[in-house]
Length: 440
Image (cartoon, rainbow, N blue to C red; front, side, top):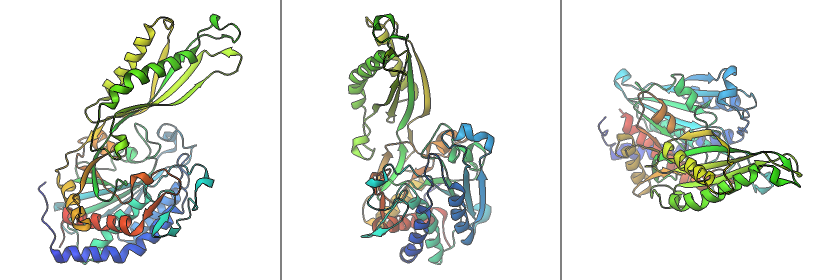
């Protein structure tokens, strides 16, 4: 696909003016989204939120489809969901060019992470209160703000009096926050044919990476658990046992001292924030024993391994196994016995930044903000991995752009700047969508 023609100056002005006029309506819709507690886990009120999105799309002329995950698949696809239902929503808006037009798919997840200790919040986490130009609430930036912006970006094009030649698809999905190699959200839509690789020309996922950046990829991830197996003994006679906890701690120390310095040298300067640019290995959970007066025969240590582009899952696993082999050959650890499991793994992802979908967003950012767009990598994985890695054929033209700032994700008093982030995001998306799909 060649780079689409530029919009005229009059069209650009009309779209930006329409985006500003629609901001109060978008703000009201975002507040309604935030006020629905969709905390995941376990995944509360998904049906209510999906229907709020679907009803809004329907009122704007979309054909709406709700996609329910079959109950019998919930234990596999939503293991932390306590059996609660999973409903995704897709809206489709036909363009004027019919089958000859391009199709752009806009995607956002409406589940949010837990609020943590509510006393740490200055503003109610599901109150959607506005103070000093910022709307506060869980999901304001990550990423109900993105869903609101993607819907009203299309409305800005229409309000400007322009008819899109190509088709628009909008999806609101669940369970991005609890991820998984397959999940009940974007993964389910792709695995079951709701995302059509032969029809869709590009996908934009509206996660917050700062409104002046186009994100073309994310770091790879392994969430793994090593279980060390020992032999029970009385706490007063530890020599009769094999202490699994000692083995787990020795492994943590050896991996930290040997792998840590190596990983710190592997960096990707496109990753934001700068603190996330190096490959990393973090040990996050450790458990063992059932009572204080027995040497434990089982110890579990979980880790979070982040990969930069150029690393592979196979290589990262081999490094972990290499530390284990080294430890087992160390005097005093000959009895080392372990098993390995992964909860989640995804390769690092990077798509070409010179594709038309990336170029139109970069140009729109320059038009709206006056700044050259950054081309960045996300510090964590996101739903980009599904169309790039799971679809056949893959949709390589999958990028991330949304309003808000990643530093707001998962924190207490999460918020979004309504003027400088939400409105800017609507304007950028509207101009990029109009140019990518063409207007008349």
